Length: 331
Image 1: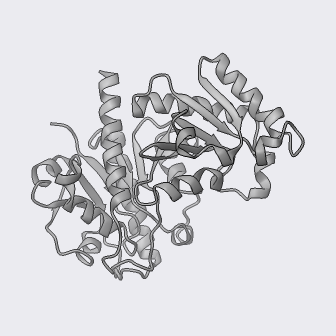
Image 2 (image 1 turned 180 degrees about the vertical axis):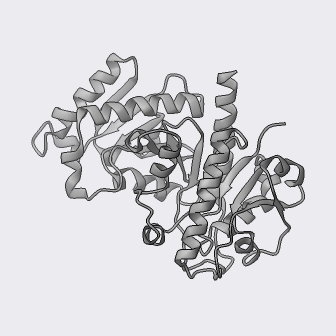
Image 3 (image 1 turned 90 degrees about the vertical axis):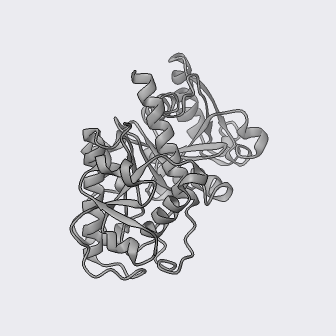
């Protein structure tokens, strides 16, 4: 029997419990593979009146998935009040993440989906990673800088070359080596997770109009174009740099399989504009499949039955598909 997916619940006071429950409720129409949640089952019961079954081991998830949402519980998260985060909830979220990641690493689960967490609350309990991506990478024995964040929608995949850094620092952080490393990881990730064996990878310029041949910036000439040339020497179908303001309309999107952008908002604004309720964060460069919905904890609507599960459904579906492709390739 195929192992189920593991979904860490995220902050129990956020919308993670609600969107996981709603995803299970839509499992048939959405064609979702079997999964189980890790976390405090009370967080789901507080926002949903559907069937929940606590399990002691991932093996039990497949047997109950058709009739109830399986939950592998961790130590309770203290008093759970939807919309009111606290440090006990952060500890619960971290334990749920550790458990789910460990089960995927051991093979007891075949892919990891991570629910939204509050970094502010996690930092208060000593969490010293920029985010869940770097934490999972370390647990997999991968340096955080080698884990590549890709955001994927139905017909757009974007990779920010730099992520959670001040905009003023981006130019100084860009280098030919970094751009080449991200390009190679993206090519491998598209082949392994999406089955695109010869991907077309576009690069956005850093400056307006891609620098106007150096008139308004030289990052394209000195950094991005040389990196693209090196990737092409590797046999990767890399193109660019292109002006970012013309890269995301429908005709442009038809010309590439993924686009690498220089900074966070350059990549995330188009994906969230087009696919706010369907965007999936998939981490490339890991020995396991890891996805997450591309949204946060939304404490302001937690417990109000207003959370839309579309991104969580998409994250579960993509995790299952990527795991299937990896298994087929390995076989």
